[in-house]
Length: 221
Image (cartoon, rainbow, N blue to C red; front, side):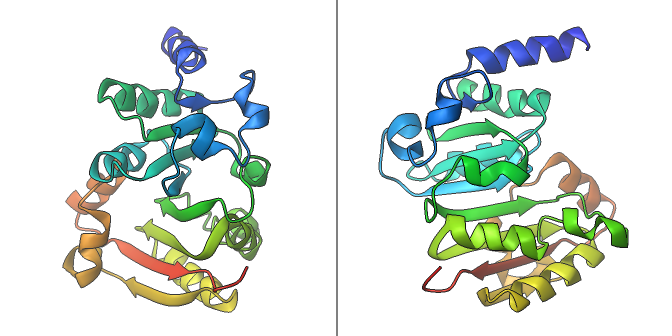
């Protein structure tokens, strides 16, 4: 382990906006994010596979009346988002270090208002399909965690993942599906506020179009 990673892991241990194994909140936060972490009753939005937390931080700045949680397994990446949020004085941004496969251990059914999935690994090989974050097994989890009518967002540069996701959300009874193959030339562009991750900026600069879809859970879970 490099010294830089060690330093970031130590930062996570000391940061009040990071929930990870070894902290008491790791076992008690389920169902208590609003009261125990944020101290308010505001909506809760997740960014899954948040990486360095660019979206979590960007959305937190844009919407101070909403609570945002970035979720990732990589502690050194989370540390960057965490420290940025702290330096900006963002009290509505937090980070959870866990594998997304175990996400239901940390949230009660209906506790989440929206989920963002921003540039996940497309897992392009057929044998990797079950690891795609829009695979039916994950979509069923999202439907349980989201409140009735809760929103799911996906941004990706991968045409394969996008077409796959568009099919799976419809097959799994998500409703009010809106999508575009070229976000920055679409009326849907204002939804993401121009926030770009590092990789998104790289893709955009190379001339790749950005795919986006938004959909809702049904009125009952």
